[in-house]
Length: 97
Length: 481
Image 1 (cartoon, chains in turn yellow, cyan):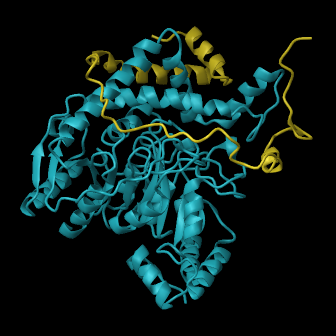
Image 2: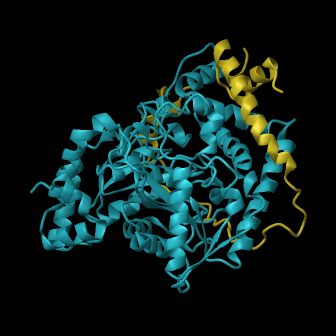
Image 3: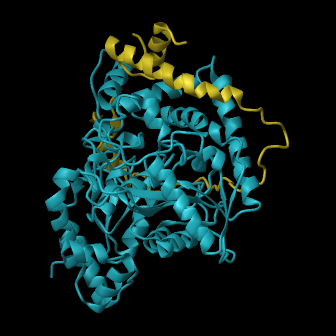
């Protein structure tokens, strides 16, 4: 079952800050959900030839060119940015000095 | 001319269209009549997160088209409600999340573009479970939507606002999205017709992604005919969604249907007595009308929910990684860039969204990937195979849409697993990628809080790309009453 350490790792991986209380609740919820999901382990394995090859879905691709006028949406998009400078999104630095 | 509630209740898209063309009333009349209903009831039902201030102007433009017979379609001047995860350029679109509370869409979803070309009127954007995660619209950051038939109960979800709008007479029809039942279950709870098209039948460009291998956009409407009209307007290939395709011309729809019912799945427990009784009555009527209704074996169907609650969170955790507080949406400042993300995502995402992101992160993590994610993909193959096997011999598969009636607000909100079990009949359809529709099958006996009773619904599923069979079945159920 999940340990407190697992929960800490998950919150780090998912980049979500949680309080200790929220972590406790999450741990309980996830344990109950994972208990249910573990039923999957009883499912038979899929053998080759059993795959539904007839399944129709195919990826439809388009040519790799610009669907939009270059720069045509820049202002609209940047207007939604929490922080911008000129035509740039502003983020904190990711490298140490 | 103002139409009252009774007059609006009688309208369908087609009869409204005919009245608009004849000039019995104008598109502005129709829109204003709905706006009056919204004004009276929206505060209590919490259906619309925003009513568009320019709805009248949109209707005025529709009237101009109608007068000049300029590209008039069945949807010209028809007032629609749009789920809040479908982008309309220049309008707020929040997915009912604090994360996007102030986000303004920078382009039109393909389905919106198509409806605009038809001249439809958008009344407003409707409440939903946050990022479409939930089955009751209680996970909305802006409060639950109430069921129009019983205000103490949920509207279902995640498209609860759209379904309550149609069931409560606050829009003539609506758009929703469906990843595991989010169109069909609220439609059933609110007494509407709800269609989840075949995976790929409708473009998802401009629709916020939950689980991309499962998501579809579809109509919620008062009748099968209305659902078909709306579906025809939005479906078809799109360069901007690589899964969207054009439907082939349908083969002839059979007049008498061969219908399969997976009884062992249905009788596995947990289905409310009113729901089972109502379903069995429908089966009798279908048989009396000359259709074949037989038990079918779908031995892997009981893995569906476990399979879904691995794949959906896995895809959701990936799709929602885009909310980083850099390009759009909420931003909170932390000590460094990682801390920015963590604070922003903690403040922006509600409880259910966090839960699913964590679950998805867990099942995709290195140590558990094979045991959960790969295993779920295998189970999905088995479930698809179950459908293919049945459709070798049968035209359609029917079950109740949901195992329970619309439940009281708050009943399941502290038990996520119980909430997930509400999706038991709708989820397998998304895993298989086939189309399915929920159709109203009457009401329960009256309750103190629901003078007309609570709506019930049947779900019909058909082979991929055979929406024609769903519509035929829907008309049949409407005729049998």
